[in-house]
Image (cartoon, rainbow, N blue to C red; front, side, top):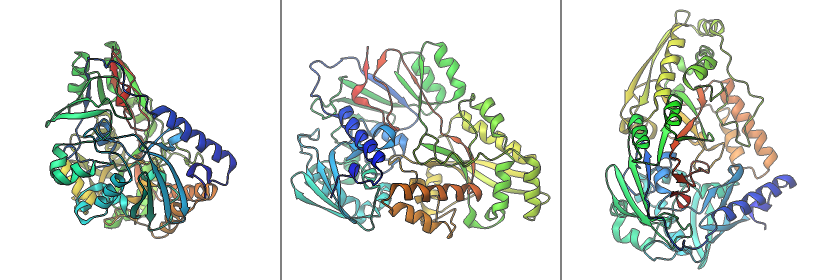
Length: 514
């Protein structure tokens, strides 16, 4: 058999993937601890800290990994071209349709001294496949994992339920933790005493601030001696802290904040989009939103170009596709939805709603920037022009999660996104936005077999063809009100060096205050 980067039939893709693996290995290869760490602490301001403190299995969201990446490592991470590259795993190969051999990085250790080896990887998988892990959202990503066993000290054999051509991507979803410490503290205790192999170790985890110190023997050796991660939920508070020098990074800013930040001598960092913002429509709940003509009318009623210019500073473009344009499987042949209120009214009449209709949509309270809230207001106004009354209500995050996870919705629609991270897989959002989800809000049995076939094919060209079929179907059937690709803006102090993001991951090991 061959390594994952060498298995494609397309020769050019072989070479590109092999280069990506090599480049990724070089970018994150250990260089040894720095002779002298910078004594100036790096301070990062985030909109929120992970739920349930330091338990890395409670979320796969980008914002949670903003914190966890300082402490934890996964087996693979995403590198150039959104391709998986080595992290705690240095190699992987497909030995049969349902088995993969993974080589674990030698010489790496957790900050408490426990070795990173095959046994640690197997212990992690054993937990995530156990009944105890069912309360952790990362376990939802483990459905195709049948199990894992150690072949020797640094080789693990993974078995999957079904063939998984994107197996190396799935290894980005879960952190490896020290098994003895996990057993000693237990799930809840470990959350308060998190231990990983990343560049920093936790000294104190508070409700709104985490104090960390350098783990100099990390395979991702840090440059700074100290790191502080602060939760500042209000955008204005993050900007004020950045401008006053209290923090060096203010995350999750909006277009309206650019002038203030740059005017104060700071810089704006714009990260590539990994998701598309939408208003998800609960087609499975019945009613008007179950009709594709109604959903298409809602999309055609929105003047995205005007919203993009007025509220997003022209930094985004109208789209009708639910994967970011920089992703390899993006289909440029799928057009944006046109702004055509006359056609929208005609479609509503054709569907039996000549006098319009009404529905309720919820947004998670406190988790969206002001430009998102303003966008929803503009969308509401545009819909009203064609006779559609969309009532928008804020919903506490805990209740919002109950809707996604348990189907306990109090509305016909909700603000959400088609998020590809942490795997970078174009099909990842469809584990939620399809019949695959146990409490599906959009489910069409005619496209589900294509989704499943696309997930299972090892033929790159065939996969692209199938993925494009899925993207086209979701566009033509208007599965959601498509807004814009995610706009990720961070304010960065000129005193900070090394700030960058690789597919939603902050490289904490490179950060240093000058």
